[in-house]
Length: 541
Image 1 (tube, rainbow, N blue to C red):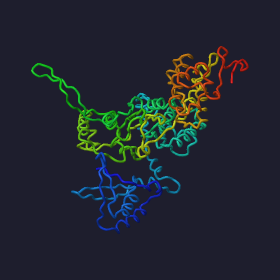
Image 2: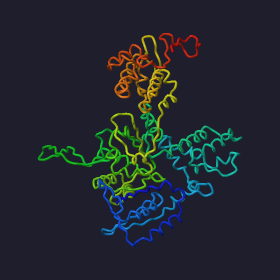
Image 3: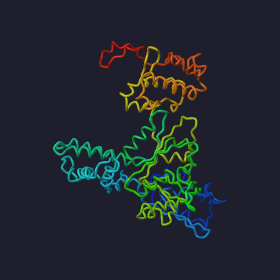
Image 4: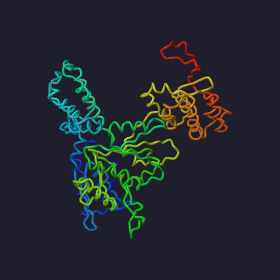
């Protein structure tokens, strides 16, 4: 049974210690021998809430809201018949992790005992796809016996105890400025230092992460890029939509046709079988292969009702400091049947050893990641509640971030502004965004550089790209962004209908907009190479 409880003051306690609990427990011991609380079943019957009953509100607050803080204490609930017994057990590992001793975090002292050499080797082979021989060579070359040769270190440096990227960068800089660096350095050593920095960045990636930003900021592009970089081929992708539900995501019994032979004739019947969803399928892989990290990509996560899609899996999104689910959930009968079958196919009872003999529990292991994209600007998105949001790390992609990484590429993408003028797609986009900003339009309605996909930008000539921009951008501005404020965005008598706006875009895109766009254009047939003199450029402001 999973019991949830509220801890409103959790984030206020930065230096919890045993004395704090001793004082609080004295208050508990002074209460009556038996105190009755209410057990309330959650709507989907997957878990229970503890509620105060009549006259117990005060002790309820002290017992559950102040003392039983998540991750600092473990609340043990034992059922005997119809009675529930509550026990508090201190989690001293969590207490130590939150305490500060003489300016040094105790958790860091514990981290110094770790050895990341094995995980580094697995990263090189499984994520970076190096051969075992190359991976072993890269691991060995950063061992203490090699690092001890550098003259700047007056102690035995074990680089595989360093898990903090900034700390490693200082060590890396020290090594490179060592007087005998050139004598010891070779291509493999330098390459391994670079790969170890990538490895440290990789292992610190959040387990639940949402990329968000305005349309066209490159959310899917960045998600796909990092997925390949950090997970190799060990990821799967799904796109949420309004009809996507728990049965699609996790799994459910579904009808399917089955052919049987009877009296020499083939008969088709309808039977039912548990069909696992993408989450359950990838989760089984992660549970059975702890040395490999697996990633589930969710495109457009807020186009579906996430509370309904995740269901009780929502409870598993709370991760402990090691990356595993802080709580477990009970599996349903159909899930147990599927997990039992999967365990037999995998062999060695790998799932049984983790989930129990009857496969009655489920959790997310530390090698299972869920990353997603979210677009808050679209009209068809579903609300996402605060409880769900706070279990994710959010990565914001700025409106111009993608251009900064691909400046030279965006100089090539050009559109017609009038019959004798052209401008870059990016300059046009920025000018439109500046106009929207002057109208106090929210940034998540702005136009990102990949509002027109990279593949289309690459494949289109000026005429084709101009047509695509007209059909996509003007439609977006006319029907969505400025739907109720067209008179503020477009010039008078140029936007009465959408077709009129498109026609005026073809004639003079710059002056379709009210008071014109602040856009640099170039006269057609007068463009020259950048290395020629600027005086020869004929630019119209």
